Image (cartoon, rainbow, N blue to C red):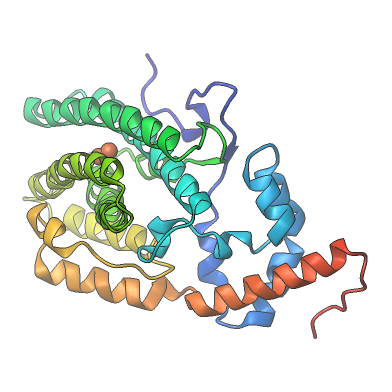
Length: 312
Ligand SMILES: [Fe+2]
Ligand SMILES: [Fe+2]
């Protein structure tokens, strides 16, 4: 069996549609409504193509190229109540994330034959957990009336694990992305409780307990792998910050208590909170939403056959 497979070789059945992440785009945008509108209208055909054949197609056709800021998944939004559509989008994004987490842990177990037995046992345990999470979220998608494959799949989680240094895999995936998942899961549990959806709250609570273990694997092994190698430790730290920055837009609440339990230090959490507050250099949420509203109005005017003037 091949080692180190690229994300393009992940196997999916015909229900799935694959898109490539564009996290860099947000970081490159200025905090100005008109500028954001110009960029999104320019790339509108590409954005439309990405949602074609999925449930987002109708959302795009209604709201235009800024639709994602009007229906943003709770993971990025991190707080507040979600609409049914937002819930479906978020649960689906988590579902494909669980799938890729299973694939990433499985690959890491397979790719590095020389690593300690305990590490491999931890990765095997993680595969077992992630497989259960895939099933849990498949059922939760069903629970909110969604469907597997209804939304495009973005492979950023697996891509974060495409490194030939295992320490970068466990810092990128286990510490960073699964740390972010803890924040999103905490917020989902709270929403479930607020909405009286015990099934959602309880199911996600079970998953969160496992994720804490996975983040802890990341904390423990990144420390172990780099203990006699300050240069490698610095690379791991830089990679974690880079990944953290790429996913820090939108502003979100950090699940501090859970993350402390999973091996984050107070110092690291202060840093992550600061980064989340600065949105990794991306525009403010209010600016994005205002731009999305303008994009929607211009899109609808065009659909009515009106003449929409270019922005100055
Ligand atoms: Fe998971
Ligand atoms: Fe996990």
